[in-house]
Image (cartoon, rainbow, N blue to C red; front, top):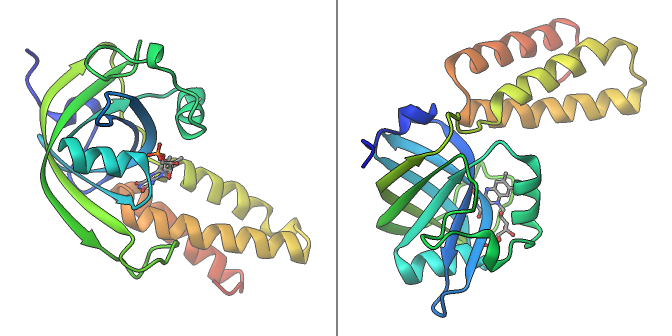
Length: 209
Ligand SMILES: Cc1cc2nc3c(=O)[nH]c(=O)nc-3n(C[C@H](O)[C@H](O)[C@H](O)COP(=O)(O)O)c2cc1C
């Protein structure tokens, strides 16, 4: 069996990655949903899942889940739109033809509210800590982190700020605030340094952010 070390798929401690978590209900029906996974070390992860989702219900019930790592936009889309069928899963609950997946066992479940969250609903989420018990890499892949895309989007918006009309400029500045929030939460050192530079530039131009 492959040595378990999440850094093999580019996952660094303290950063969050977008994944597709597959779980089973009590009748063995399988479910997949996109979920952000925070890396806590080579063999440990954490995620925060809102109440009301099948994923949370199944994890509470089974105390285990499978994290699928993909770069396929359609797979993320299908899994959010609930279009995955029984046939799309392997026996071990991973998604068929997936580049990489790892199996997790829950070690801790806790109620959580976070003030900084864009969706403010009190006590509506559960923080799940888990150990990775098996890592399968079928094809070299890096887990996807949102912050680099946000840096690029912010740069594109920055380059258009001066030529945009008022309404569009407002939209760009608002998008920037969201990008800043996400990058500060899940970005690498370089992403954070970049967004700080972009922020300074926007301020220098005299815009309020
Ligand atoms: C990229 C992405 C990341 C997401 N991350 C989370 C997350 O970390 N926690 C959460 O509760 N929902 C997250 N969601 C929303 C869930 O996927 C969504 O609520 C889904 O409908 C749950 O499906 P289920 O009921 O089949 O579990 C995310 C969605 C996307 C597209």
